[in-house]
Length: 469
Image 1 (spheres, rainbow, N blue to C red):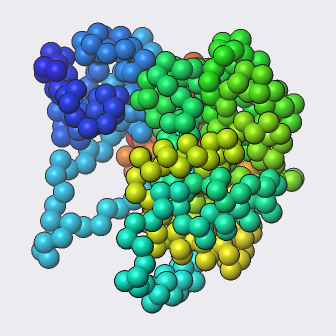
Image 2: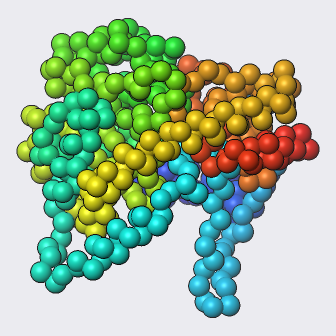
């Protein structure tokens, strides 16, 4: 595609990744290189779509993602601009005197979806790694099974039976590259281009982008205090092929889907011949009342694909997740997995399998529930003491972030941009919506905010958003 007349970047249709990803990356690069300066105005989504010759929805999704990442700010009739307070990164990394690149500094304060990095049992984990390293042998298999290591699949089956309340066979469990890998595998099995997919609105933006990249019709379905409004989904797309849901803790609102909605969803799937993906991303961390049960535990008709991940419970860098497929998909899932990859890293699968089988995983989760509960309480207290009547914190039973409505400091996307300029990685709730506004609020991750530092970190947040109006 030729150089845009309005923006200092070009979009190549021959590059890697989806067209949506390439537009996003090229705008990011233009901002980071200074070709799009802070405060610069971008064309409307309609104008840019016309200029690039793409669907309006593609540009809408790109702008929503850039807003959520703090790069741009929407100002209604005044248009969309590059965040005026954005700290532009160097266009090229510097090299140390030793010739190696410095380790990146990852902002963790208030980062949503990130587990605690200071409470992880590194000593025990390192011992398990050492143990399995000593067992390495030249007689081992050259490539792991695309379905996953048998020991890990069996360990997951045992864990799910106890912790999530449903039984399955190891043959139904497929080890994936995190949740994205599980979503990719499940959608390969049930979707074709132009199929309709129900998607929670607001919802997990990366999953939404992944679905859109497959050429399917993403149908936003609103969420309320009982979770997905199934009746709205039926009204909009009664014959949708798939519904993607987060029933235990809705992402990002953290509400739990009611039993009535769960049964309505499963009834719809059974009678419509459709399927459901249950993203069980952080159900382990519930603090008020009983832990929500898995939707899969009442799936009598076997219409649910159950996706889990170790990114929230252990470490994101593991890039390990799993998908439990309905029994009717075992053979086709095996064939699809073999086409997708040659298997996830067997060594780390062995370490995780041992970590689960020896009981370390369950003990770690129990410990983290207590510590996370203490951290969320400390953060909520510090926020109320600092902001007083200007802040309202929504009641939430679980999850790894708080949702706070802050008055008198501007729109949530503007507050987010000011905070991120000070490396405080808050997120804007409004940026997570497609068609149904979720309100103007901040999402504040508490997993990496220690109790003793909550007051100091909140003071830094207040200073950042007050001194950078």
